[in-house]
Length: 356
Image 1: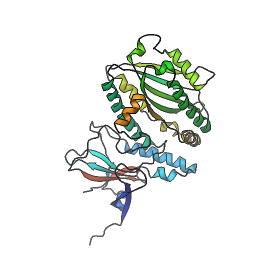
Image 2 (image 1 turned 30 degrees about the vertical axis):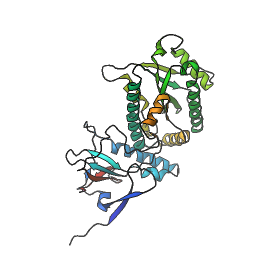
Image 3 (image 1 turned 180 degrees about the vertical axis):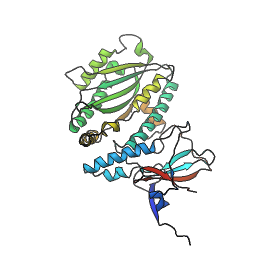
Image 4 (image 1 turned 135 degrees about the horizontal axis):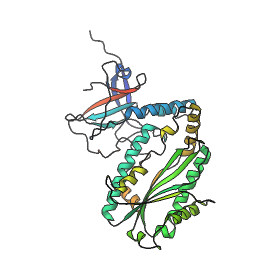
């Protein structure tokens, strides 16, 4: 007589839904949770053959959850459940997997969510830049890095990020900046100085400007002028660090525009900054970063880039759908079938079963 193992229902969001609302229940046997020896480890590769780092990102997510739990953050349990059950559509012919349903916590320090955000942000910006180039083929590009002095705790970081966002808006309205400005894409990054444990907050900005920007000194803004503009906009009593790079259309390997897009699409916070061998430091850094990033918008578009973002009907790269993220946007084929991968807490990996 065959005896079935009791089954468990896993609640997954509908397509394009990561939060509360209508749900789909997937039936899985208990042995899938604990994964017996016949279970298969999840291997999810891109079409180019590169393996997607699901396990690495989930392990970082687990470490982050443990820090939140010690700090008694209410969202700790929500972070713990992030990406624990993944449903894919697998192509019958190629075996290629396409993420179909899961649930993401969307916490700013979650490695799983930041990985997905970075892919999405990069993919969206590529589409926007391509459309700008199509409409304004003579436009030129400038890449700025805007920095202010480091801060030392979460409260200071939160205030500094707010000040930087306001300062950036002011600077974009300065006459000499605005006269040739077509649009921009701005991304904020925070890094940790391991020597003094301070936080360095800076902005990566991809500016699209008219070709007249480079005609003469009345239009062109050199580095010294950018420093003074940023100093004035931020109301600083010192000269801040400002890096200015002229973006060239092409180089030997890939376009400088793509390199600039890649720079702006980096993770806003690297998990290695708060996952060191020193737990006390890790706890302090997570507490500071949680406070510092609270309700802060780290990505924004302006001018023509913002208009195109809206016209292309692209959703929010920070808080939107994290399932459909990359440039492999082709729909699953008609003969695709579902497989489910479940995070195993004991064996610390994703396992799948023969699902058909």
